[in-house]
Image (cartoon, rainbow, N blue to C red; front, side, top):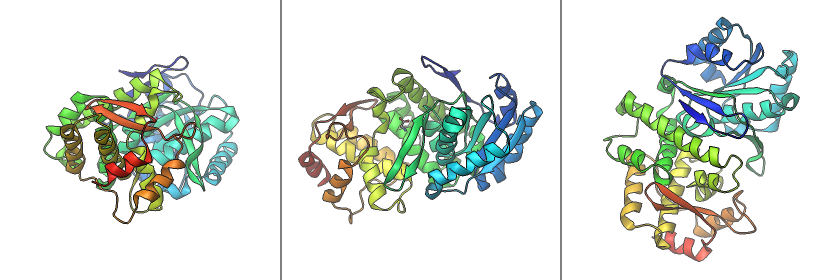
Length: 359
Ligand code: GLY
């Protein structure tokens, strides 16, 4: 059993194929109130809404639903206002629970609504994308975008349970699956050498159809274990947790310079990991061979590796200045020091970045 071990309110990450139908009985063990608001998007709800609601109702919960249109462009405060309206109309109480049934956008928004409605109601994550399963659903980062930047408004608010059913991934579009693989590779590089090696020994990683059930479960379990280990040691990102942002500094720059249209998040992270690997190489922190192993794995997963030619290094440097991870005016980079190990560095100068990216 995987546990996110926290000073207050530790919780389980339950991973089991075909388990959505048991969500209600699993939630009943949490000893929470009767009412549940399920938040989802129309497509995901079309696939899994019935199973989810039936399972909750069979376990004695009273349910209501709220659907948010899909996509990052709806991840803003007005959408949260509408969740509150539904909560109010259905007399959601403090002991009630918000269930997020969806990918990262649904999870982040539902968590933020749960953190703030009545100063906090129970919250359960049922992630349906690989990226949400291995990263966004665990660890309690919730929030919405501000017109000036992604996730600028938010709260740390931990779920009571993360219920993962890997079989839900069969309806995930292949591009989204690959985007999730980028985060799995991230855990291999920063935390879990054994996971990295397993991925290296897998012939194809670019689509769910090539991945055995056993490997999929290993990828999910090891990634969630890595995230749980890190979050248990540093819930509010005072230090260590920042390593989970590996690939995100340049990745966010690439996303914002391409107006969030050219790349999905995991693809931008893949490009960012390759760039961070080059910076680590330039600084003598890891070897050419290790960088090559990482880049080969990213390419094998069918993910992009290069910053688009039209984005200048100057433009990337500008985005780094406004990144959330800037501390006391210094950009903080997560850099690998070996396969399975990473460190946080504020010694990366614009000159180093320019030199590293010029190759
Ligand atoms: N996705 C990075 C974190 O949860 O800290």
